[in-house]
Amino acid sequence: MSKVDVLLGLQWGDEGKGKAVDFLAPKYDVVARFQGGPNAGHTLEFDGKKHVLHQIPSGIFHEQIKNVIGNGVVIDPIVFQKEIEELGPYNLDLKSSLLLSNKAQLILPTHKLLDKALEISKGNEKIGSTLRGIGPTYQDKVGRHGLRIGDIIEPDFDTRYTKLKEQHLSILDRLGFNEDHSEAEKEFFESLDLMRSFQVLSTEYFINDSISTGKKVLAEGAQGTLLDIDFGSYPFVTSSNTTTAGACAGLGIAPKQIDQVFGIFKAYCTRVGSGPFPTELFGEEGESLRKLGNEFGATTGRPRRCGWLDIPALNYSCMLNGVTQLFMMKADVLSGIDTVKMCNAYIKDGEQTEEFPFIYTDSYEPVNESLEGWTLDSYDNFESLPSKLKQFVETIEGKVKTPVSLISLGPDRKETVLKKI
Ligand code: GDP
Ligand code: IMO
Ligand code: MG
Image 1 (cartoon, rainbow, N blue to C red):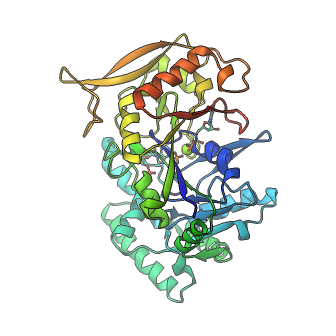
Image 2 (cartoon, rainbow, N blue to C red):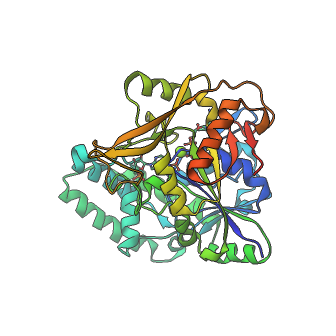
Image 3 (tube, rainbow, N blue to C red):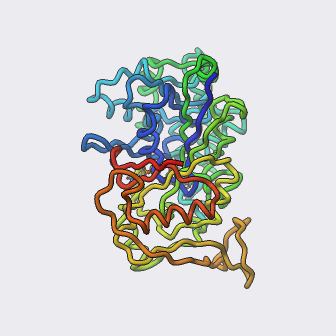
């Protein structure tokens, strides 16, 4: 019997999960997304081409692998159609390699309108949502009136769709939000036809059968731990559990089936959207890191806020997820900087704390440590990396008490180094 490994983000998303899943995928038989939806943008680069996936798992370019969109995902059929069309030129046998859970919730055009209307109604307190309809769709799931992929083949689907849409329209009316969605509705129904041509099944059976027949499964997270609905910097979070627990619920896997948990982090931090960010750099410093790291959202194109690595947050994320191995991404971005920093604690009301706060306020000041920077040259393996970079890695391992087993030094699949543990 084989087990499931989980790969997830330890920060505020965009850590490089897409690249890492694509890199590891050849070791697996199944890659399965367990939560989130089109708010995600997972970038893969190989053979000089860049691909951004939103809902489709990042193992899709490896033909021998089955890719599963799990029950924990919220799926927009219109985005699904676009993604399938974009994959067209690669001649992948998607009807065979992509499986959809009949229990994944559908994002309706009116869910996106609600997302927009609710954000507008929040004024200055807005979450900075990607406006992909994520929050309202998960709300309907928990409210027990959502529609699921499995429903699209039922004879009463249109009636149920209309009922839910009418509910949405009455909320929108109360919020004074009125935007035409007739075009989107047309696209929605067209895209359902495409969806019906895919394999829609109880993927929890497929995954558990894969495990019991010795196949290797990799669960792919979206967003990051600090955006988790329970443990993130609430209310500036997404609407799902982005943690290892979310992988169990979002795929139908028992906790005892989880083996390795790969926790991904950038050598610094970024955040897109609103919410607290204690190590954030402003002005010139922030701008320069943003430029070096090309930190612009893969889904919305928004500039990402940038700051130094946050060790208390990393420790918190490792604790919540049971991380067994760390993957450090974007180490190349810090190359050439004389002094790099990491935050070891926060000062709150004159007291030092290493605990991730209930709610961050501006009074949380980072306590930073300075380390000598490095300049990246050619490298073959971990040993041939600059000594200051190796020290940076070892410092993190010491503070987080978890080994760093992969270091990423560029967006391409090949720009990756494995470190022996
Ligand atoms: P994800 O959401 O976690 O999959 O991450 P995104 O794709 O949203 O953002 C990561 C960005 O960094 C993408 O543009 C990747 O191509 C890029 N990237 C990933 N790893 C590295 C790396 O090690 N170095 C550099 N320079 N870019 C990287
Ligand atoms: P990947 O998988 C970075 C952020 C949004 C916003 C908050 C809530 O690419 O790492 P939502 O649309 O979920 O209601 O937005 O969460 N957010 C992400 N930030 N990467 C993501 O996904 C994100 N998905 C959502 O910017 O602050
Ligand atoms: Mg992303």
